[in-house]
Length: 377
Image (cartoon, rainbow, N blue to C red; front, side, top):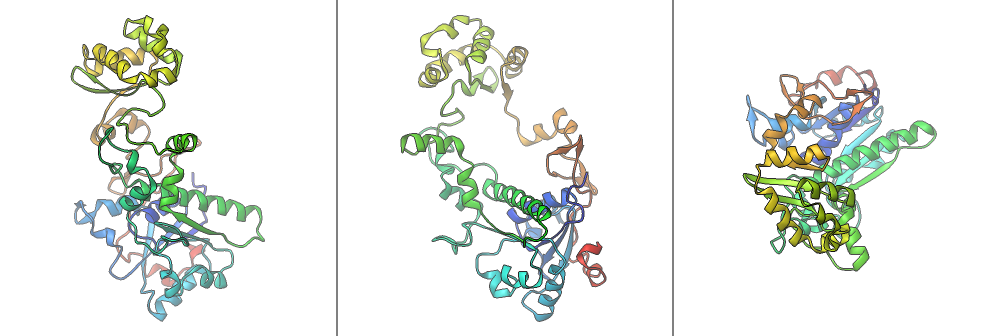
């Protein structure tokens, strides 16, 4: 299944957000041409390494072609402009203003190819008071509000344990590119779109629970650990040999939980009679649940609640998640080339869509682009 077959993407991006976006487009069949300096994308030097190759780089650049160009030279720009003349999409994540100085900004490329979709990914957008500010994921997390609600109650702000700002910007960039391609397909007379994707904007807009609390009260929420700020019981709980997650957000599920605990009267207790009341009395409720769960192992708690249809789980690390039957059935780590990779997760008509070509060596396809244009790939 290759819904983007025939689409050509010029990828000027580096590190994470842009390459994550274009890797997903490659998974769906787009021909992605990664333009690198003669020294290569810096992420080629980020460990860990297998056989001298960066695993990080490999995960983000599967299915792409690599072409090295010096965009500061006349010859490099000439070759680049020739590629853009027949391309559908360009993705870049330079700091605002850099592309214009290189002569590869939207205006320059639209003069060559009016239909090109030009997607810019940056920390803070192409305009605004912080647009020129350099950004890494932790900066975007810190300024978006998401760090302020992550961590233990009363504790210090904590970074989310993945580069979420980069990842969500890559997701929104790929989504907007697909929308722009669809719009252009429906109206062939329209010119290409300009897409301005900000890591901070993406992180901010994703915080539905935090925004709902802020907009309702005018007060900024704070960290509450693993528990949900609006529902209970929705938290981690101590079992005999570790922590177990229990997630209950309505009265029917709470009645099932109370029955599993052999205390059905809890569901009739006024203090726990609604989600709102359970949340108000969550500390007392947690103590009751942990008194019950502490008699059993994590596995036993999960077996009892799973059998009753109550949402429950152990807390896995990435190795446990990767080794699970679910990961195998859902093809979360299929082989791409000679090693496992992590492609886009969606099944199309029952089939996992992903590129089976590994990440390219630096400049691997230089000679190829001496001979073909984008749409001859």
